[in-house]
Image 1 (cartoon, rainbow, N blue to C red):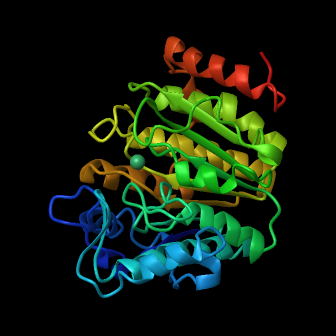
Image 2 (cartoon, rainbow, N blue to C red):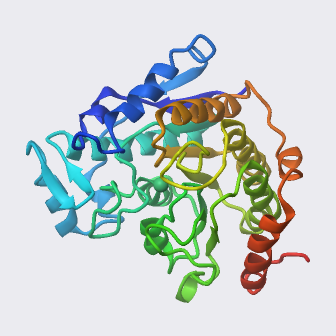
Length: 349
Ligand SMILES: [Zn+2]
């Protein structure tokens, strides 16, 4: 059994989007209610979030941008983009989202807990250095990686992004940086349009951005096979000291935001795959942060399956799952990935 931490706080619900917006407080309400299910309650260590400090936010975002988001505090409604709005409590929620992830990372790196899931909002992976985008204000995962390096002294961090959308903000934060390996698997063509196979990083960071853009219709087997057959050898070679996950649940088959066919069992399989990799390279240090996921029932069930896997209450078999991959779909993504990634990594076949 693992000691698994969870970040939850009612103040994340104070980030209010307009009526009918898919990224609503109901997402976290659904997850927080699920945490009280009889098979969940008592199995997880509560982590109290703190607000990220200004200096910490500035590790990724510009001072002007921080000021612009700060100015939304106490203002009933501010439209940052046509689809990204804030309410009076959004700025604090965004600081707590990053700071909650920092606390989770600190406790995992110190060994106080084995792994953790920051159940936070607003999400982060679309947020650019100076621009809100796609429901995201501050880039939680990118900030988490910088926090791990600057405050905790880690050298190499892996960020895996399995949200159905490409994590453009995270990629741009680290595309010049060989200390952060960014691996994203996402639907393509699709919002935000970035994340092609050939986007592999720049300058010294060349090779440390790995994009796997896939057409719709991929499910548990194909995702698991891409983790086991493509991501695993990269991770073993890169040897991260911490694995962070931009965990979006919009690849779920019921989530109409995307066209993927993942199930809760599949997300548990991906979690187990990453737990195994983390065990091999960094003592199991794995921290997830919530990104998208808009079908409430699917979101609750998927987060539950992931949390139960993290805690060791279930044990998925990634090899069995990946054996069920549809060959044609898998070959499409593997062939293109290998063609590009062989230049940078030791990959067979
Ligand atoms: Zn998404």
